[in-house]
Each structure stands twice: as C-alpha cells, then as structure tokens.
Amino acid sequence: MLMTENVPTLTTEDAEHELYLPELLRIAKVEQVTAMEKLFTIELPEGKPLGHRPGQFVSVSILGVGEAPISISSSPSRSNGFFELCVRKAGDVTAALHNLKAGDYIGVRGPFGRGFPVEKFRGKDMLFVPGGLGLAPLRSLINQVIDERAQFGRVIILYGARNPSELLFKDELKLWSESSDIECHVTVDRGDDNWTGNTGVVTTLFKKIDIYPRNTIGATCGPPVMYRFVLMEFIGKGLSEGNIYLSLERKMKCGIGKCGHCQINNVYACQSGPVFPYSEIKGLEEAL
Ligand SMILES: Cc1cc2nc3c(=O)[nH]c(=O)nc-3n(C[C@H](O)[C@H](O)[C@H](O)COP(=O)(O)OP(=O)(O)OC[C@H]3O[C@@H](n4cnc5c(N)ncnc54)[C@H](O)[C@@H]3O)c2cc1C
Ligand code: FES
Image 1 (cartoon, rainbow, N blue to C red):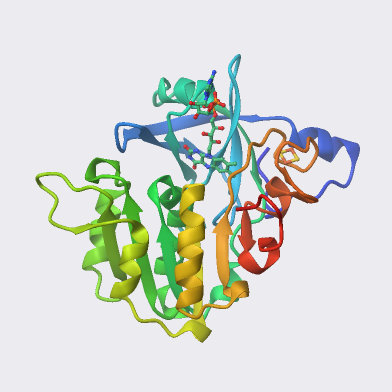
Image 2: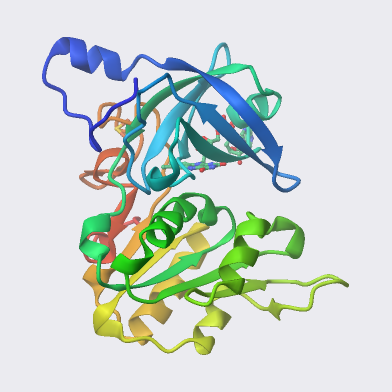
C-alpha cells in the first residue's frame, strides 16, 4: 500500500495487515540505462501521492517469483503522478522485472524506511558521493535539492563508476556538469578509447574540491567496499560524524521491522535505515 507518511505507523491489526499487501501498479515506461540497469516509471493511482522522502525504498513483487527492496530514484519534488525505480539485473526478481514492459503491472509495498532528513540540510552545503548504482537513491535527494536550490548552499557531486558504459543517468550528469551553480565531477576506474574525463576511483575526486566542513553535509551511497574510503575522505576534510549520511544495503524481506532479515546488532536496517548518520552506526559491529 502507498503511505502518505514517511515511516509507517502500525496502529491496528488491519493497518499492520495492509503493510504486507502489495498494491498492483502499472509500469508506464521502461528505459534501458546501461547493459545491466533499467529505469522503470511507475504510475501512481489517480490523486494518490507516493509521499516518499529521498532515501526510502519500496518492496517490489512479481507474482510467482518474489519480492525485492528497490530505492525510489525519483525526487518527491518531481512526482506528478509517477515515480521511478532504477533496477540492476541481479537475480530472480530483478531479472523478471527486466522482462516486463510498459503496460505490465508490478506489486508495490511502501515507501518504507528512514530517508534523508532533508529539513536538517536546508541552508547547508551538500556534498554528494555516489558510486555506481548508488546514484539511483542519491538522485532522488540531488534533484530535490536542485529543485529547491535557493534553500541550500553549494551543491557538489562526486560520482564514480567502474567504466564509462556503467555511468548512470548520463543526461542528468551532463546537465549537472554544465550548470553554473552545481560542481559535478565524474570519474571511472578504467576509461575506454573515447573517455577523456577523470580516471581513478571516486575518492580521487576529493582533491578537486575545497569545502567549509562546519557547514557541509556529506551523503554517500555505493558498494560496501567504497564506504570505508569515502568516510576517510569526509573525515579528512573535517566533516563531523553527525553530518555524514550513508545508505546501507542489507538483505531484506518484510521491510517493516518484523522478520529480522536486515538486523545489524539491535538495529533493523529496514526501519532505522537504510539511511543513517555515521555517528549512529559507527559503533555497530558489521554495519560497514
Ligand atoms: C534498501 C535497499 C535498496 C535497494 N535499492 C536498489 C535499487 O535502487 N536498485 C537495485 O537494482 N537494487 C537495489 N537494491 C538491491 C536489490 O534489492 C537486490 O539486488 C535484489 O533484492 C536482488 O533480488 P533478486 O531476487 O533479483 O536477486 P537474488 O535472486 O536474491 O540474487 C541476489 C544476489 O545473489 C546472487 N545469487 C542469486 N542466486 C544465487 C546462487 N544460486 N548462487 C550464488 N549467487 C546467487 C545473485 O547473483 C545476486 O548477486 C536495494 C537493496 C536494499 C536493501
Ligand atoms: S526486513 Fe524484516 S525486519 Fe527488516
């Protein structure tokens, strides 16, 4: 079911039961973004906003196959009756999803989880560091910040992918790079014959920027191996642990704090996360 609140509150047995019931939603458009990723535009039932905040996810189900958590990639500021999911073909559910076309239906539960506390970020400089598919959830926040540009300070984006063919949202990257009030730097681990941009892992881009750490929020999402190095750069630049936000991926099933699949010590990543300030998870064994 689609919630208008950011975090679902279970008040009655009926409400709890409803959280397990997927709503069938129509796929309006499917675009091949890279060899491995497709962007699905999903139609919302008339007049019913998804009501998400950047960083939240939905549970997508395909009848007879299963369910998978997928981040909402579109910004709440650009909803107008649709939302977007950028999906990498990884296993059963995502492969079945990749076989669907416009006009087909998927099951959707959510939005679930804790997203980015956007209201706390207003007035701050924003430093986004997505890696690979991590741009999918961060794009939701980046585009909200861009749509409400006057309410934020500097906007810096450091994006890295393994090679040029794996870069996501190339049209948006071009727009951001060309914009006079966004500082966007892109790199790839390995270039190809046509690549004239930066080469090296995403952390090599930090040397291109100067920041005012006391007024800067750092937000990162990417493969787990990247976090340790990005955190070192954030902290090296002087960001406080409470101003660093990460989105953590864990195996999830229910998405609503009931099954324990996503548990990290005493924390359920599906409810307390997937977005966490670093200060909250720093002490958690196995969080990073
Ligand atoms: C909060 C959150 C947000 C997410 N957002 C996104 C998103 O925006 N986009 C996105 O694409 N993904 C996202 N993911 C990841 C996504 O949920 C998983 O890729 C998805 O659940 C995989 O489901 P599946 O059924 O397709 O794959 P599964 O079948 O569950 O396979 C998952 C992995 O296991 C491997 N695997 C499967 N079967 C075997 C086997 N027999 N032997 C060995 N390895 C095997 C697969 O190769 C694959 O790497 C997110 C995850 C979380 C927790
Ligand atoms: S996915 Fe079930 S408790 Fe988090």
